[in-house]
Length: 268
Image (cartoon, rainbow, N blue to C red; front, side, top):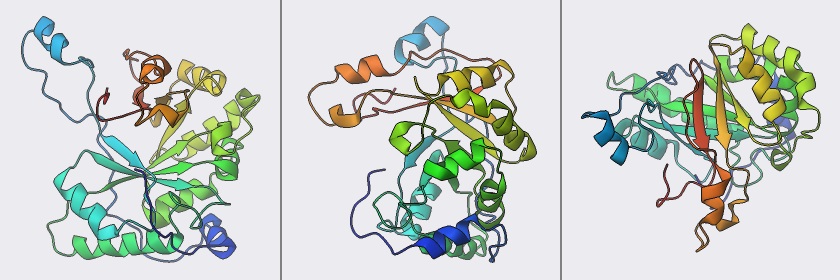
């Protein structure tokens, strides 16, 4: 989700608190595990369904809208999630940007979100809200090096049950020789089976991604992302959108997703 307006304050002290496994506060139980498969209507003969359903054979889990920040009211997010249960909100995490730039929510905002969810839970008419932490920069590198403390904090104290790793230059990570993190990253994934890890798959990350696909873990998913720049979004040139994303194809036993270059005209 593109965000605008003023961004709430946040600084080094808040970033340090996020990294601390001893952060106080109630666990955000309103963020529940997302079902791997959310039924989507595919009735009718296969040949007829294929004509109208480009992802025939896939089960749609959810649609992630990333970049929520302090300009968005936690109450608004909860209202939208109550009406559209398939929506997942992506919260970006990057140490040098947290609470300082658009699309990077402050920890104060996260606490407000947690309080709003707790308040709604008390009414007894609350449906789970889906959130995912999108890690970039040093946060992402630390996880790949085998440090599970940040992910554990996000799960225990903020209720995040999905964590996306984006080890690309665009997200502040040196993507050279990512495959060297295979064993250390796998150790974190195995150590936290209650969290689903999502690894972004691009030309930069394919060495690490394909190696992990050889022995897929039950709590590891892959997001195939468009490698082309987003400058074409909203413009007249749609050629980049059609060439950047790989065609849909089933991966037995692996939870996958597609992202990048999504517009109202090309949702698939």
